[in-house]
Image 1: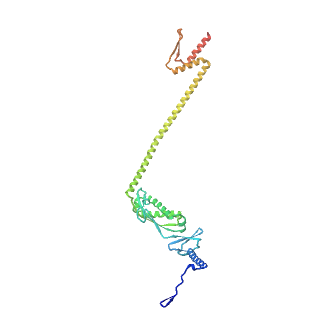
Image 2 (image 1 turned 45 degrees about the horizontal axis):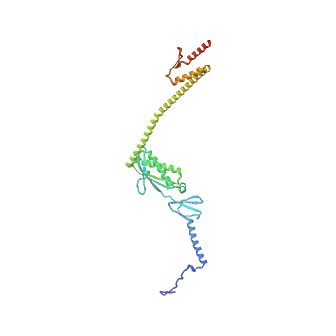
Length: 336
């Protein structure tokens, strides 16, 4: 104990956790855990909804919208809360909203009279249904952007370049807005279009124009090549068909010629066979002489019998004449 300014001060005893009994230490630990548990339960029992927010309360997968701002209660570990910002937001099409630089993949479009223009738009949207905005699609804003780009290109493609660059902006904006809203109503994304504004419209750079001309030239070259190929095809196909017809006709004529030739040979063979039946030796001799005549067409064979009679063997006389002569000889011999 110390005397300070006439006041006796007693020194506080030094606290040492090792001096605590096990029962006391256990009570302290349980008290701390209890306090932390109470804090966690209280924290998980309440949630705050701001003025420009709406909440979605999930209970075993069932969603419920909470639109009133302020403090709300929920069952901890059973109910979960997702908050959705309901303020009006926006995005740009055709330019970077941070750097204000042109994004040609989005801004470059073709008008109805086949002119290029760079057109910039700003799209404003707001969440209309938090449940649909959270769970109907993976990214409703990206879907809205794709829809907006499609509708913009459709309307610009139906409008001439003078209207796009000068007097037709209001009509273009109104038509695009109506088209986007119709598409949103079909898709149920949980967001709606507040407004779409055409920020700027101007002709493209010279480099883009030259590139477009090069593409058009290539397209025309392609069409010319196709037309030339079709012309060549139309010229060659009739000629080929005529050639095929001629070949078929020649083949048919050749076939008929061969048939006639074979028919004649068959008839000749049959005739020769008849003669062979009648006069086998004479017929064989005749066939031999005919073969010799074919092999040696200029050969002449004359036989002199020595008694003044001469017999010409080659070239042969007509087969029928020989037959007649042979028949007469045979008849004469028979009479003698």
